[in-house]
Image (cartoon, rainbow, N blue to C red):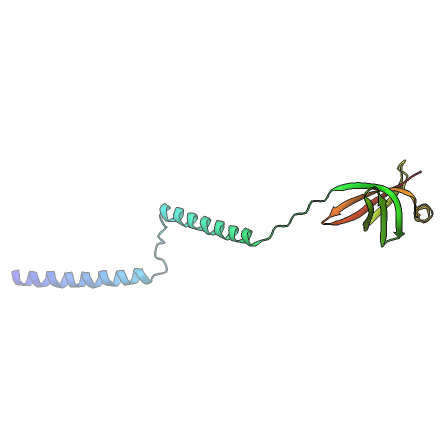
Amino acid sequence: MGCLEGHLDSGESERNNRRSRWRDNFEMRSPYRPVVEPSPTNKTMKKTIMSILCAGIASAIAIGAEVTTSTTTTTYGTGTIEEYSPGTTFIVKEKTGPVKYRYGKKVTYVTKSGKSLSDDEVRTRIRIGAPVRVYFDTDADAKVINKVEIDD
């Protein structure tokens, strides 16, 4: 029996090995294989790498973008009208000499007391030699009119 026992044991072990190999192959192909979650260290590393990539991309975009700033200040000049053509030319003779102004999108004409002038009043009251105060915005080198104040 001793000889037979050894033979049976080797047969059983061979069958067990075949079963084990089949089970290993089946588990590898099975869609029901358990999902292995990444370790917390891997998750942290992925978050860190993604953060660094996003920061790098954002800084590259910021470096590539040109930033232009312009300062607009409203000031005024006083003098007498030297040349006037509605919508095109407005030159005022100031103490420093003649100053050319450019018309803005909307120009308001008012009296010193603050009364707004209608178009008809502007045509009759704005004339060469009339004293004025011109409120303007500086846009680069141009003086852009936004309000003209004339004497009452």
